[in-house]
Image 1: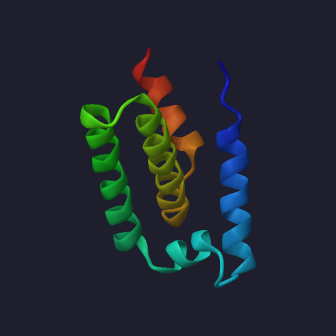
Image 2: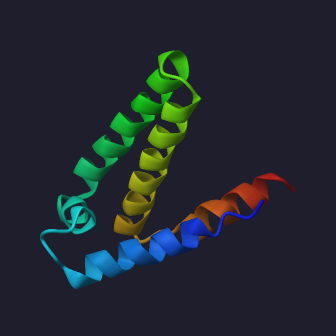
Length: 94
């Protein structure tokens, strides 16, 4: 199954950052800097683990979506994209 939503989400993230709207959560998160974004990624990862252990499948899906969104913001803040991660994963499959 192809998951093109990631490309769309990356485009929305780039757009929200470029717009610079302080009411945008994405812009505020990006503006907070890499260390804050990285902490948020860690927090979301813990929430996925907790959901997997005690909260059921639906919560795992919801928390995983949060984690992936925050990871994409982090990658963007470092000048990277999911494409860079995909290339690394492809190289590991050889």
